Image (cartoon, rainbow, N blue to C red; front, top):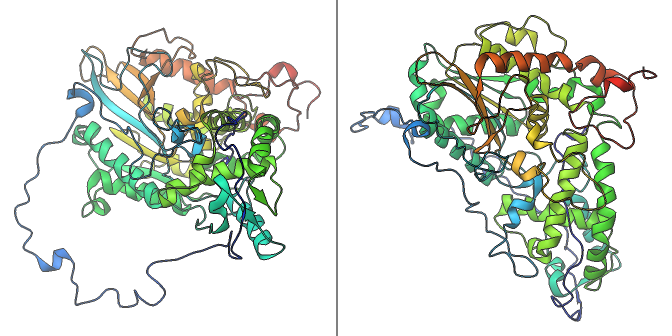
Length: 558
């Protein structure tokens, strides 16, 4: 089952004035669309490691002065927040209608967008900031973050750029391929992307996230009585993300001895709240694929004028809706892997907005509020969060929670000032549903025939590369006893009014006891066994907005 939705949207109605006439097509090279790879160091080059001619710094000695200063606590002491605001060193793309100066193309790549700090009012709290509210004191922080930018899925996923490359290469090596105008680059285009693992930019994202977290929350390290235990899963990009984060947080020379990295197995049949889809069959069948079906309805509408416009510039292949989506997918993947992609600026601003909505539909109906098996996939992490927050062990194991891990104080301590868990976009989207962060779903089910105004479910805001969902535990007024909690998603505070007992608050705060009780009620209403294992049919129309199969419709299902 595809773990990360590789759907992103495209758009209608390009301006006819962009390219008035198709230039004479140029015959493509026979290698157009071919795949190019390189691994460094090449085989055999590193056989001399370790090399006594190059001792490490600890063996050389003479480190110079090494006094350490005090810990940073910018989240409590700074007058303003400093977070990611651009995608450097990735080149910011332009659009076909040259709107790139005022329109952020990269923030319309859905779940393939790089994380940037969101505006304060993104989720409805314009006066709230991640900075500790005046008069409060921060006691604890819980961080759930996505891995950094990666290469495309390597398992034959829908809209895979490799499939587009194969189609073009087959034409170029066969009857011939000729491209002109905005597509002329395809005559010599070579596919250079790997599969699944972090790109260099993705490594930078994770390292920077670690540095930023230390700057914001470093002072909380003073509350540890043992080394931190932080978690990730066993996929290579997940391990690399966790290590890059740790290197940024602790420092390159120190990180290996500064914390414990717990690696949970990510594979079918193994319980892990960071990869809950592996123990939820309905995440991997027709129920889990609903988002593709819904997104494709929109895709058939918005790609039609793009196909008509671009087809005049190519001979030897016939573009389909799938090809158009894939080309925009290639823009995002090449940008975060190679720094730049010529696919980006063949699409207009409106076409990128439609591409974003394609991703929104896919996530809403497969990994979001509109899928009946999603809250079940997020509830395990919510159980773990409440276990940590309330300082009580989980005793019932009927969700994705790994009983062996959470029953041990070694592998699952409850009293850490800083918790860090690395996961996937699809789990973060499931967790926000399980947490009942209803401001994200307040605009209701997403239509498939138009883009609604003022929608809240925008994938690039919720699950971009390096997305981070943060719970701050505070005392208000300041003391040593926690009294309140709030959630922050990519630097924008999220209202907690979807939790029973949590009142409206301009800073997104909820009293701790009320939050724990309300979230325990939410956990109780999510039926993991039914929603993940029952044989049911999703209602049509699908009006689900809380990620659960409607209890009122259970009669007649098995």
